[in-house]
Length: 274
Image (cartoon, rainbow, N blue to C red; front, side, top):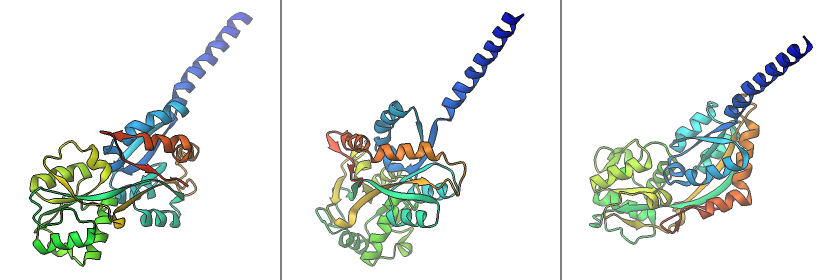
């Protein structure tokens, strides 16, 4: 009688362990709201398996424009924000939606264009002056138009150039409302100039005969940051797991992993965590 009871108890215990084990493992994941550039460049495919192997934490990435990623995270739809629009990121923290912001890495933006170079900007290093020439010649320009980090930087440069792109919309200035890869495909098909982050351009496989027309302007600097979504405002946030990811990204190991990622021998992102 005792033996049957003991075996029954042991079986029940093993069943409970069997049920709780996989369930717990399934819960060991975080959602990272991020940008299309970190995803499309292949960076996440490279570094996330390293983090998962070390911690057992799966990272599920939602890759959208930075503006949408900020909105999603502000709604509590995610645990970590990893984007590239520093003023908007700082506002996200100031509004109480994020705990703190950290620099992670940088690269730069570039303007690419067709070999015919209708605006005559090839080789320029003053981005605003080049964009003014694009507007003056009414050369085709394809914009993401999606409130992404790239789009925010582009609009800032148009403003510096004194160009009202709202008035030009539907003419020489086109907005795709799409991610970077789709905008590059559309723009190249239109024979248009396009502003893109260098990481996406290096990894982009459909360049055709396009060249980098404008680069090396300090205004084209592209900083990425990482933020834990505030668990006090959004109780569903997996703060412990999310912080483990942030700590790893900012650690020597994570920074080295970012630096090691290359495409065709070219480094796409340069770590600069403090």
